[in-house]
Image 1 (tube, rainbow, N blue to C red):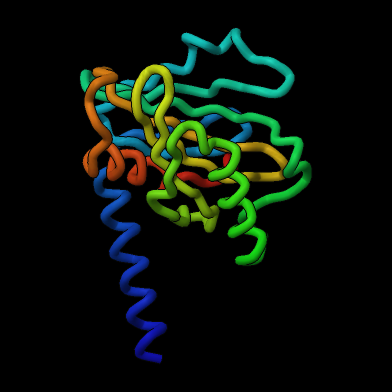
Image 2 (cartoon, one colour):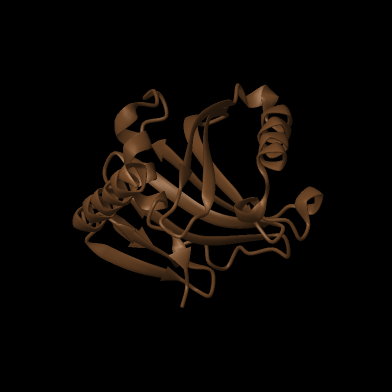
Length: 177
């Protein structure tokens, strides 16, 4: 009983911190809703006409220092699958697949989080032609729900501040009602 009470208290505290820090809410179409700090600007039009059959750009959150891009991509290897109802062995296999697929990007698993709605996200650090970035992903019904966070100054290294901001946004993700 004590463990259940402690767990409940921890969850309520985490939710209150998240809700206190988030000042704006955005509904990403029929896909999901997020909360984000009011210090960020939301752009959901710049790349909205560049959709393909397999990829959909949703929005960009940014300030003077960093950007967080949100997209959806079809993942043929995971067609019909979702990480939120996968067992641990399936989740481990997903992580191994992702690390192998992006091995040339010096990918490393940084953190696993679970959103307030119970969706697992895996946050990786990666290197690209434009510098280093965090890549957060979950798979929902064969679709990669992903966020890329990076500094405007491509020479700037990744740090805990950017990771925490990305986590703060991700943790609030919930299905659109």
